Image (cartoon, rainbow, N blue to C red; front, side):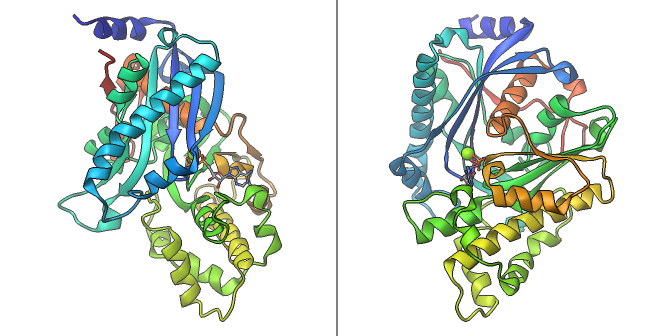
Length: 396
Ligand SMILES: Nc1ncnc2c1ncn2[C@@H]1O[C@H](COP(=O)(O)OP(=O)(O)O)[C@@H](O)[C@H]1O
Ligand SMILES: [Mg+2]
C-alpha cells in the first residue's frame, strides 16, 4: 500500500481534519485560501476558520487566463499549458502562505481545490442535447498535490454533472450542513462574478433546499470599469456607480435577457453575461448618449434587481427569512444597500467571513468525500445528487 492511501484512511478516521479550501471564480480577482479545521461530518460538521487570505492575481497572470477565459475559440496548446501552470502557481501560493503562517505542509490533511473556472456550458447555453452539460476548471490537482506534498481533492464539479446536475452551484451541500436552522428560513446569497443563492426553509431536510445561480454578480460591473479604466479591476466601494444615474431604458433592456425567463434552478456564466451583452443592450435601448458612469450605476441597479427578484421568488411574504450575503459583492455598499432596501422587514446582513465562504464550502465538500456518509448528503435529485464530489490526487 502506498503511503498516501494509508494516510487517507487515517485522515478519514480523525475527529477533525485540517483542510485548505481554495476558490478562484469567474471574477479572476485571485486565489482564496481558507485554512479550516473541520470537525465531524454530515449534519454534525463544525468549522473553525484558522486562516484566510485572498492572494490577488497580478496583471500578467490574469491576462494569461483571459486569453482562454469564457471564449469559444482558443489556442488549444495554451489551454494545455495553463492547466499545468495554474496548478503549479496555486501550489506555490499555498506553500508561501503556509510558510508565512508558520505551518508545516505535513500538518495539513487535505487541499480542496476548486480550480480556475474557464468555461461553463450548461445545456441551456449551447442547446445541444447530445452533449448535455459541461464545465471546466483548470489548474491540475496533481500539480498541487506533488508541489505541496498534500493530498488534494480537485474537480468537484464533474461528478455533479455525471450524476445529472449542471456542475453548479455546489453551495447547496455546504450551506445546508453549516447553516440550516430549526426555526428560521435562510437565504444564503453569494455575490461573486456570478451570483447564486441557497434557500433553506426552516426545519427542512435536504429535499426542500434549493440552490440556483441568479445571473451576473460583479462580473458586468468589473468588465465595464476595466474597459474605461484599464488599471481598475472593480468599482471599489461603488465609487464610480455613485457618480452616475440609473438609465431606465437600459435597465429594461438588460433585464429582458432570455436567461431570466428560465425557471429556477439554473446556472450561467460570463459566456452569456459579458461586455458584448452590455454593448448590445446599450445599442438595443437606442440611448443616444450615455456616460460610462450612468452605465455603471445602471449595471449596479440591474444586479440588485435580478438578485432581489430571485430572492422574492423563494421567500415572497416570508418576513422571518434571513438573508445572509457573502462573496466579494458583499463589500459593495451600493449593492448591499439596494438589497437591504428591497426587504425592509427581513434581516439582511453580511455573513461573517463573507470573503472566505466559498473556499470554506469546498473544504466541507472535501471533508464529505473523504470522511462523510453519502446517506446524509444530497437529496438524490438531478440538481443535488446524492454523490461525493472531487477527484483524489496523491502527492507520490
Ligand atoms: N470593496 C469592494 N467594492 C466593490 N466591489 C468589491 C469590493 N471588494 C470586492 N468586490 C467585488 O468582488 C469581486 C470578487 O468577488 P469573489 O467573491 O471573489 O468572486 P469570484 O468567486 O467570482 O472570484 C471583485 O471582482 C469585485 O467586483
Ligand atoms: Mg474571487
